[in-house]
Amino acid sequence: MRNITVKHYLNKRVNPVILNEEFLYPVYIQITINRKTTQMRSISLGMFTESEFDKYQKGDDYKGEFINAGKLTKDFFSKEVSRVKKSFEFMVNKYGVSIDKQLLSNMVTYIEPLFLNWTKPVLIKMCWDYQEIIKEKEILYRAFNKEETLVKSIDDIRKSFEVDLKQKIPNDDFLFWKNINSLLRYLGSDSIFIDFAFSCKQEIENTKGLNEKDKFLKQLESILMSEL
Image (cartoon, rainbow, N blue to C red; front, side, top):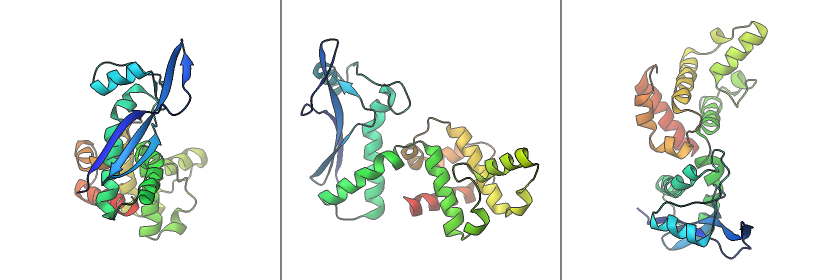
């Protein structure tokens, strides 16, 4: 297992924002894998005075400037280092490649749009890829809205045009998407994808009303390993 270190730091190389006569600096993230290091801006876009960031580092109660919206919150910031580390662990464990500085920088590009994105859009996209590419059903599913589950699309068509396409869909596929619908409802809108990827088995166990849980778990594990 490669040694992965992730930490927040205050970037004082940039000009500070002055608020109420205090200097606030942006928070960045430093990622080090086997002594190769790169940086990225904190997705929370948090900004701190030096004294408040010092409190954060010591584990004391702290105050930073955050936009109170989803990933731009104090709550997300407090979990960000752990989530970024899990994201790199996922990539390193899967690919087992020799890490150089260029590859490390490339890995950073996946963090926000994939691993630290909301679970719903990432998982739905992966599931459509699974349906269209792995199962070679791209013609059958080409016309459906790929931003929603198949079950939701069929329901929208039925409500709008009074046409029920359910009988045209292979039963296994429909049950798979029905399970995805149930899982997403259980996870809720605040679920972050890397948290789900690390706890997929437990989340499925905790979701009520799933069909053939063991089969569904194998399907999701296959999707996660093939798509990530």
